[in-house]
Length: 235
Image 1 (cartoon, rainbow, N blue to C red):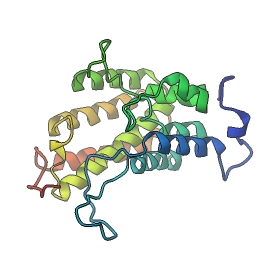
Image 2 (image 1 turned 90 degrees about the horizontal axis):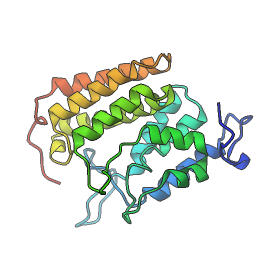
Image 3 (image 1 turned 90 degrees about the vertical axis):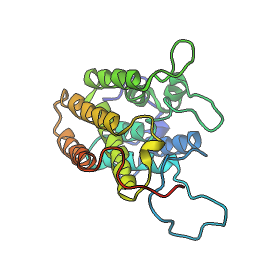
């Protein structure tokens, strides 16, 4: 249920099942924040002619849309779908090196969405503003996932489904994906297994098919050669 500090009424349309102004606002804000930022690997051949000397890149927005689509198809409400679109806004800087504060997000889309985003955001920096070690960040994330809400678990599962699917697709296409990721094959295997286990602390039927889908991608990862599969062509 939404709290008293939910988004402005202009952003909420409970009687309209076809269109959600809240989700539309989340899409707009996410696209603005992540403008000019890109995913770490490209494994599909381009569907159009790329100008000579240019590299094709995948905007981060494509990942956010995939995650939100999974959440929506699994049957979660508009607050959870909106948070899925925004799940990287607090955690990741924009192209100008800025960080979005939780208060700014809360003022824009309401406390419920901002709380969900915070629950699935890593604490990347220490008190001195230095990047924390990868393992420490992930362990804290997993602890937060266990004690957070089922809706946060749904966003996390959707995020990991798409991330690990992308890793597997890249590996099978011969891309050296682990050269650009912070965690190697063994670390990714540990992390995705841990996320899967943490999600079982929440008893919601909508999480069951999401867990099964992530388990399939973990099986794909484990079925490939440790270290990333075949030798890949460079970008």
